Length: 162
Ligand code: PNS
Image (cartoon, rainbow, N blue to C red; front, side):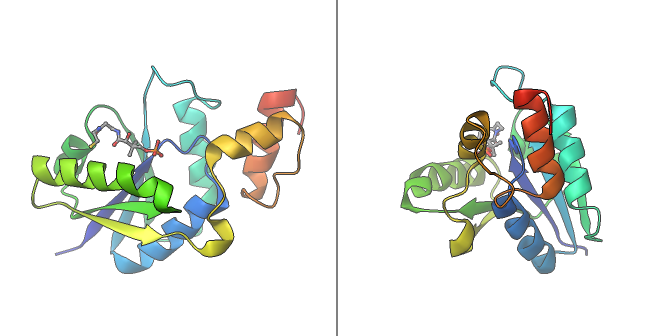
């Protein structure tokens, strides 16, 4: 039976840290679905369609990775897709409490789906989507923290030009 994992998140926008987790998780499973949360109440820079499209571009060369979106409970999405595991990245101790809580809640909701936490590579541990947006807003150089097309699209969104 093929082993499937889901890597869920807001991905507003996808960063090099996310991409590192995607590449590593794709080696552990037969299929990896990167699932973008479609959440209308959250203030996002990019619409969910834009976030999905940016991700599709970024993962297009990784054979067993696909991009999808979901609404509602992650665990329901995982059930529907017959997923074996949820992937999350851990950057720092400050992430730990939230990740532990989510993993335990999801396990309580479905004991058959395990959360697999990958520790972020140290070179990406300070990168977050929020900081990318903040640095980009003030016209700082974000090209070293996000894939090329993403850096252009962030600037376009924030300043109307690449
Ligand atoms: O990248 P993020 O914003 O940290 O990702 C958080 C995400 C999307 C994984 C989480 O908010 C989520 O799973 N939301 C869907 C609703 C849900 O299932 N909530 C209960 C989680 S225990």
